[in-house]
Image (cartoon, rainbow, N blue to C red; front, side, top):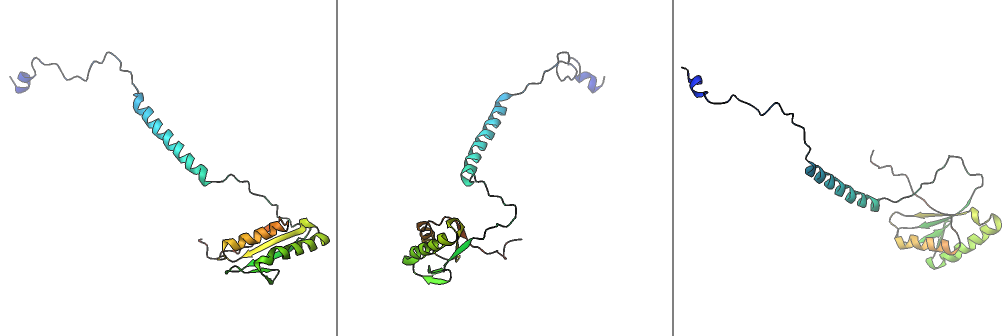
Amino acid sequence: MSWLETHSQGRKPFSLGPTSVPIEPEINLIPFIDVLLVVLIFLMISTTFTRFQELAITLPTANGSESQAEMKQIHIAVSRDGRFAINGKVTDRSQLSAVLNQLSGQGNQKEGASSLQVNIDADAKAPHQAVMSALEAARDANLSNIVFSSQFNNQAKK
């Protein structure tokens, strides 16, 4: 008798289980629910942060045609050290409102108030308070059409 015959007597042949009963697949829902809750918490937190980072604004559109009526411009220059010049004439901060009132009065008689545009040319290092003073003076003179000048940045990353 061989070794295989002596050691295999009385034992059942190798089996993976009963083959007559079909096994139905079962989905364990507890880990699935845990993963969904983690994803839900992540989405709630990330949408809260993005809401405070973005502003809901509607940008104006233009079709590129030039306006028919030319606007009279009042240029206010603000220097690096906070000094003012209106249409090239150096003006003291205390006289800023009076000069703008005078210029807006001339504009009202000649072309109408809606045709006046205040163009603020502020130095990049100008104090914020100086720019705010120019804005307040324009508001005091009932000038609401205000624009800021800027220059093209040639050193932008490409």
